[in-house]
Length: 116
Image (cartoon, rainbow, N blue to C red; front, side, top):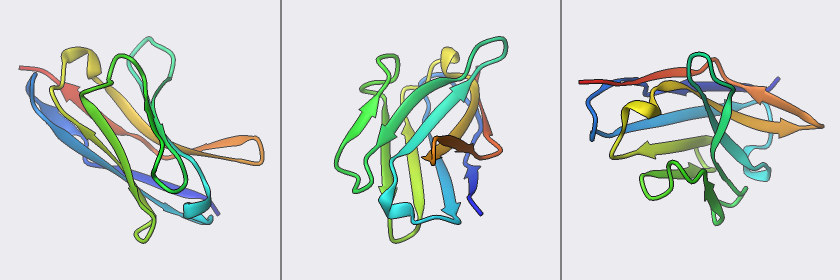
């Protein structure tokens, strides 16, 4: 069964950095595009970044481009999101996701709070 477990969230000051991890299991990780989404209170879930199965094609939302870096380690079945120069508007629950058979699977999410 597909399982995605995010970790690494927490409280960080504006301008700080955080590295999120998502451990995946239950599917052939190296064959799938992996996604990071986030959802702030009162807002819809939005796509933050995604990365091709081999890790060679990362893509980012305009709001995070230049600050966030998505990467993956297929040997460890893990996708990462390195977040630098964090802003208060980055505060949200962050989820990793994979699409299989027309369905998105989600982890439980990890809270990121950017505040002084």
